Image 1 (cartoon, each protein chain N blue to C red):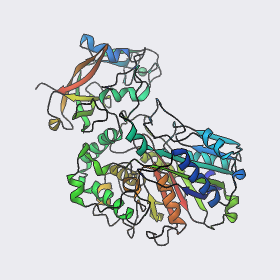
Image 2 (image 1 turned 45 degrees about the horizontal axis):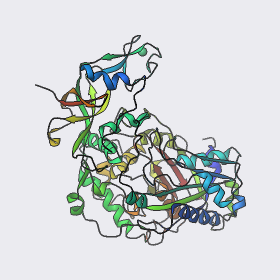
Image 3 (image 1 turned 60 degrees about the vertical axis):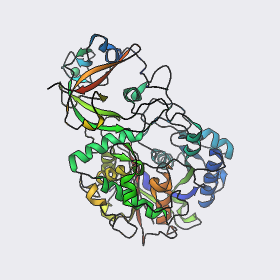
Length: 400
Length: 133
Ligand SMILES: [Zn+2]
């Protein structure tokens, strides 16, 4: 296979702020913590960073597929560039893209085309703090809702559990997927969180706790939903020419990206709601590499809701369509010592909603052999994915 | 904040106000006959500009649904059913809507429903209730 642009790129550095529900530091401070850490981890100085990209940028209201809620956007690239006094060849922030990892893919594009050598990519949220202060979880234009959300908000379809609940219900209807199978995803995340000191949920989660928890939007209950936190993650996407100079000696290579949207750009007009945009993005990713799903040693599949893990497993070809439930059932296949360890740091369900960048940070740790206390043996190939419904992007990563 | 209302524009006015006359108006292509939703200025099938709102029967089937039980805003009355329904006129012609007029537990995939309208100011929100048998 001819060389793909992303194969000229590495993740040279990673950084993450403290993560929590009652932090005292504000979101810009957390963002800068993560950025400084990532730059130093990559063996760089601030003057080496010549690109900055974030998803979704500083948006307070949007007409697109990723409507912001309180605390969901973080500081924009302008604020970060100025606070770090960077000199950039390219910077960009925006939500209109195939999900959160669009920021990483944009960074790879900027590096591969020669516009930049080291791009700082970050994702920051302070939803825990913002939601405590807000009375309303959605920001709606009092003059009326515009854009794609205008077909959903007037029906009280305010939030992710509503939109994903529609997908989950259809999946259960077509394939017999059960709540016990969704629980296996949540319980796996919690078991792994107990080995990650930064995970916000450390207590034991039992199947009875899951089954007796309150329904949010049927069939999704409280433990099917991820947790709002404050926290920031940053990575440095560098030219692979920098690989020999990475001080930790463990550059993470980008093997393939998946960004294709193979359906309508809409939450409510998706033709087959037994699959999501994950299917098109997954097919796209595997078309760009000689690797196959069987090569993957560890994965961070987007788990903003438990059922999304099933959509990603099926969409990425780890199992057949409709077989996501049986794949995770019982949890042994997806456990740390299973054939496909998932959400090894606790995922969004138990470590907190860092919006896919938590998974990226964790899988980089795994590939670098630095996932202390929860290291997957001999992890060489990792996969991370981001998004739900019509939003999907994914990255195949490998060690040398 | 209560239930949000849509901003009315030239493209969506028929959909959101047709209920005043008891009609569900869906964009239909005068050239190839394809129905499309949401309404757009050109037919996504044949690219014709002859797209006009036309009344449909209001008969539909539940494609999927969810029961919202979370009070996202303080004024929200819960639970209520959010559904995707497929209109009888064309395979894949769907709307996101509410199923009203029955207990939330009575809704099921495949259930036959028919349109009704919930008035909010100048807007007549198309909702669905269980079809009379
Ligand atoms: Zn036409």
